[in-house]
Amino acid sequence: MMTPTLRLGVTGLARAGKTVFITALVRNLVSGGRLPFFFPEAEGRIDRAYLEPQPDDAVPRFDYEGHLETLGQDPAGWPESTRRLSQLRVTIEYRSASPLRRAFGVSRLNLDIIDYPGEWLLDLPLMSESYATWSAGAIEEARNGRRHADAGAWLEFLSSVDPYGPKDEQAALNGARLFADYLKTSRNADHVLHTSGPGRFLMPGDLEGSPLLTFCPLPLEPKRSIPRNSLAAMMARRFESYKTHVVRPFFRDHFSRLDRQIVLVDVLGPLNEGPKAVADLQRALDAVLAVFRVGGASWLTALLGGRRIGKLLFAATKADHINSSSHDRLEAILRLITLRAMERASAAGATVGVEALAALRATREGQARAGDERLPCIIGVPMPGERIGRKVFDGREEAAVFPGDLPENPAVALAPDAGPVGLNFVRFRPPRLLPPGPDGDEHALPHIRLDRALEFLLGDWLA
Image (tube, rainbow, N blue to C red; front, side, top):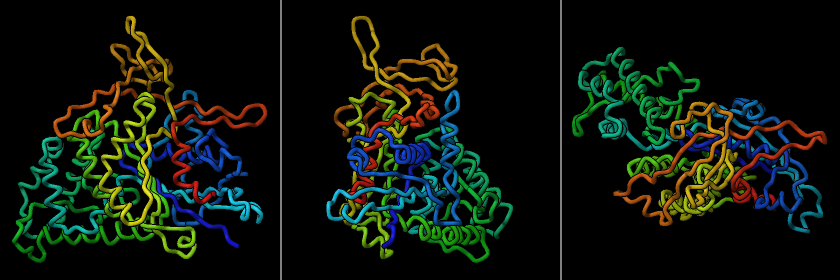
């Protein structure tokens, strides 16, 4: 009588590959990619999938066609990363696996894909924090050895102001600017570093220059009350306003309405930095995932308006940067990193999965000779400026790289005294998306395990 709608949230911390994942997912659905482990497609039960106008007029549309155009350039380029909330609707017409239901004809499902910056995820834990608690945690982070140099100017500012003195708009503006500069510098200098937010200081979107972003942490004395009309009182009020006007509406209008969620995680970067970076990633994920509204969900509860994340998938991205022999090891490491979050979600009734994938595969596997020995390697086109040994690549020449191996035991990689895993990272160009052939057939995009992710997230609805 009506077409059900499944709302899929796609998120992840910075540089996890959200835009590429959505573009590849939609392309494979709409154009019929090679998806042997996505059983509705492999069994020929999907008649067609197509884009339709999105239902939320106030939400920007995900620029699917623009991202395909970027992939179709010669040479191909990577689509721009997520900078704001966006949405796309794909309608899937399929035949049920049930003979009884198949007798009623073709079924339809609206898949609404909601993309939002991973930086905004950092805001969600703020809902349960006071200004004093948040300030203490943020200042402690800034004084940490990995961040102290980047936070120097802001920490110097903190030493020059009196939180309990009269409120001062110029001091608030200066402190907010220095705090935001510190957060951005830390993220740009160390791509595996994750902060406690606020996320809009890193990715302001339409709030750039807003008074809602004119605050920063201040060093407060634990047992001292904050006087009215003081600098600290003004900062605390703006912190609460930020939660009221930014965080809670985002949670209420978008985040709490999801049925399925995939969290994309760049695990390889932190592993290559060492145990402190991995612990940093784990803390960020724990804080964020504690806010997820998970629980048992069914098609009936979704139709009646009771939204909970019934399935939660953690995906370790960039699996094409390592050999296939390490894919299961990467998956096991992510499972260990997210163990606490998985246990909470499972206890609440949600189905939780872990997958190592590359939504758009930029390399292929091969072998290289080292004397009499053959080493497994990955082959691709390095991005312009990438260096391997003494050679600097121009973005058009192929190269073979021995990436290294992940440890068989995931606990070894996460041990506090472990060193970096020593992977050899090279940024590769994406494969070029070729125009349709003479017969009109679309060319498939190569991937690693994207079909398994689709089966986990959508397979039950299409059964």
